[in-house]
Image (cartoon, rainbow over all chains, first blue to last red):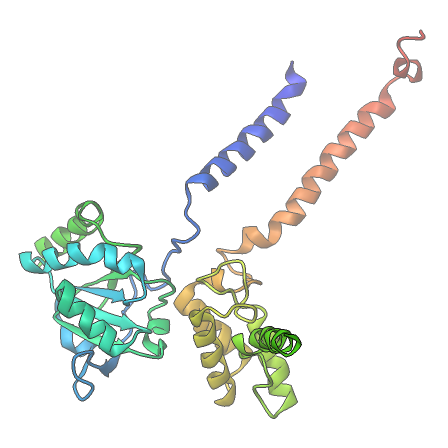
Amino acid sequence: MTRFIWPMIAFAMLAFVLMRGLTLNPNELPSPLSQKPAPLFELPSLADPDVRVGSATYENQLVLVNVWATWCPGCQQEHDFLVSLALTEAIPIFGLNWRDNRPEALRWLEALGDPYMATAYDQDGRIGIDWGVYGAPETFLVDADGIVIYKHIAPLTRDIWQREFLPLINARRSEQ
Amino acid sequence: MRSFIAVFLMIFAVVPAIAIDAGVAFDDPELQARYDKIIAEVRCLKCQNQTIKDSNAFLASDLRREIRRMLNEGQSDDEIYEFLVARYGEFALYRPRMSGKTLFLWLAPFLFVLGGGVILWRVLRRRMAMPIDDETPEEA
């Protein structure tokens, strides 16, 4: 009987590793930006090409930076929640319109509501690269010191908001 | 009809060539060689089992554009890899660099070969220690 102990231990270890692999989502990569300063940037505003918006627009406050585009189905899914979140004034939301088309993006905001304090227009994706964006929607929680404290990939929902974001936001606010 | 087929075939002959900006990007063959090597080692994060050389996702073409820009600015290969890892993590490189986090990844194949070797050695030693007539018990 004892001769089977080592193969069984090896099997159990392999099974553990493979089972863990089943629950990992390879599309949700850990962000190297986590707990690091968010990139500083300045871009034309989506609404007006002559106005510059960027990290200076939201500095010194806790803020959500939401990466979105009209071609992205997940962005459409989360948009209603973002609009309702903006109505509660729980936290300012800054939009990064990524690799999109300005007229279409403006039409989208007009039709579905505009939850953003301002939206930057990242037409060629250059700023998206600095943020390590690889698939919209992505939502970053940036604190008053400009540090990325959380990143969520995939559509934001009320459930994820309450489970992942609220505790961090409350902890940060009670510190101040 | 024949000319229609000819046009049809021509369209399909041309499209793959323009889908990816795979043409010569640099006049300098040395820069071109470095560019070809780098883009073949960078993962397209959007389409994870492709390199940015093979992918025409716009993220891949954005990254190719940035790599061309950095090469033109005279940055070294290491600086370019560092740029990508700082933004997308070690996962962006098909050949992750040796570091504390990736050490196990690099050593694992050797550990497996070593472990297999130890098992093989022990099994063989036990077999060698067995009496010869043990191997054909039915006939004994």
